[in-house]
Image (tube, rainbow, N blue to C red):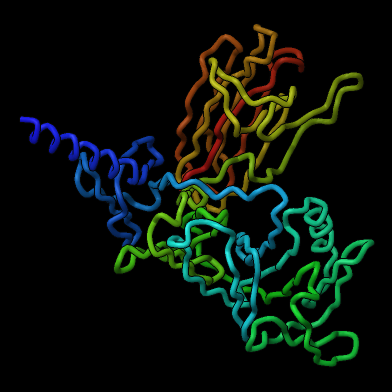
Length: 408
């Protein structure tokens, strides 16, 4: 009897360990599963789950795969460099070599068994920033990028800021510790040690024309964020991430990944888009505002029916916001209501939402109403127009479009 009990105890521990290591899969419809990636083919992600067996979910319906492995924290004071790819991917590294036309970064400390095999062609790189742990460096770097010309830049950090040398980056040497560089000033080819690039390097990459769509953002345990056009499960459980720029990262196991965020490829929050704003000229003596992203006019998170929302658009009355969609989305979702921070309980507004001139929603909303969940069909729509009109005074007639998002 004791033997049977011990066997059940061991089995229970094993099941608990498997469940603890399994990924948490969330879909855009709110369904959740625990399982392991079995395959990723033809736009379908297949998972092995204990409860329901194999489940196939279309990439367009995925929200996030959470491998539940934490991103390794960087100890305060630790120095590191940051590589940004032309697709916006960010790679943090403790050191770097450039051999020929390939970058060879050494990633920040984490589990050695999780280190990916990286293929990082120079043509995929936008910039290398030295001393990325220093916010002052980051701020100066942004300013430098805004004013750069049409040549590559070899950047030296001086006491008074960055000093860029314009030219063309050629190849890295065999040792990987120097690059050939053709100076713009005299056309001479010189060998620059990478250690001299105390500020960093900026590449003036040619336009790529049409680019592949983003499938997801991959966040790994090293703190890298990869803008992925493809995710493949290879033999032996190797997971290959191919970035939109063309770089590849092959992780020996999923232990090297923290999350696959499919919402980045499938969802666009309105607060991350730039609308065309139309509003009347302000009345003398009255305040004049149009909209705010991700905050109320009190600079707080949206709050509707006791629930806080971090994303959304706060719209002032007498405002029309027009978003260019280019026919890329199929659904518009939002939780609509007048925020709890609005003290005027008699507040009433009329919200109208149009898709290419066709009215999808047009109703009055009061402060006393419960929040409404909108789920509107915008398939093929090129222009989404949102108009808010007041039924009374300007003050207190703002509205929340909490979690307002477009879904492919």
